[in-house]
Length: 405
Image 1 (cartoon, rainbow, N blue to C red):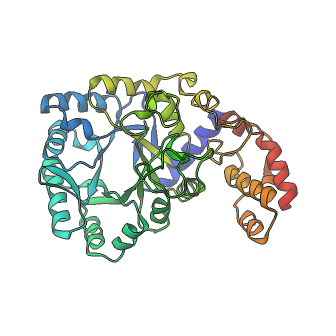
Image 2 (image 1 turned 180 degrees about the vertical axis):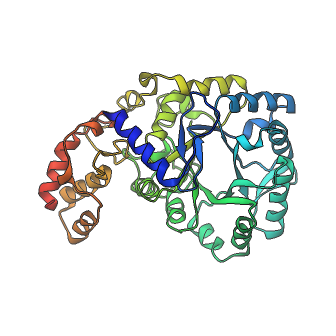
Image 3 (image 1 turned 90 degrees about the vertical axis):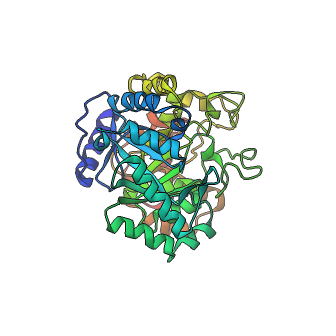
């Protein structure tokens, strides 16, 4: 039943947003990139490795990625070597790759630099097109906006005017923004003009407090037990409004989650478990993987053939000291509900009401939901996807009793 429901939901969504299945037939699975009309591979390729290899190795890496069904690449790095290697590797196959290129990156003084200066931004973007050998990219990604102040500074600025100009000229087809801050990502999602958001997501980062970003002092030493509520709201909003989310730092940044010694959670995850964790969220379109060489690409492509047991990240979660069995963390991995109930949000409101008492605001939030707990059919599909063994049907019954429907 679970696979049938998921397949049906995916088919309906692809029809709604007008996506077309890529012609390259492999075992790769594809997802809609929000409302863009683009269909992207579940796993995609980052640009970092292309600075470490020569053009011949770049061609070999890109050929294997494309032949395996990868059709999405993120290019944040302004390094001439990186961009030129990717451009060389895409010769003759440009139309097979959806490019997410960053706006506001420039190579200065021998290093990659973020900028909001209009002249530098324009120079950096034109260099990107030239080195890639193309006249456009599909997603123009506003490069790293990690604070409310940075977000507000972009509004009504010459920098943003230039981004819209690029879209009007057809040099970018869709506007995106990258951020490590859940509060900023949520503001971008609600802006009405950001179509794709590149966000840092993995089992550790989901537990950051508030709008914290990974490298803030003490952030990774003070992880909370459950998923941050701001992140929950961000994921919910993007799923509901069909905003594409592309994942960076899938393995924790530098692969830290893959090694028990470096994992912030004190336990090691496999690549398959990290990818499955991210893709379990309905809003996620693709996981961008940092790939340095053919061995790493081969390792990551195993995702296409991995068994359900290999993808089971809940095995790791149940061994974490702070993963309390039966407690909902509002992670949304239970979605999609067969009748459309936003289960995580219902559980969040229920827990809040039971802990702090019912109030008018909680009741108003509940009443505004598109579907309510009373519609639960007790089919059990959600429970099979829950990492923490939450008795969801029972919680739906409690919510119906407390909220009245």
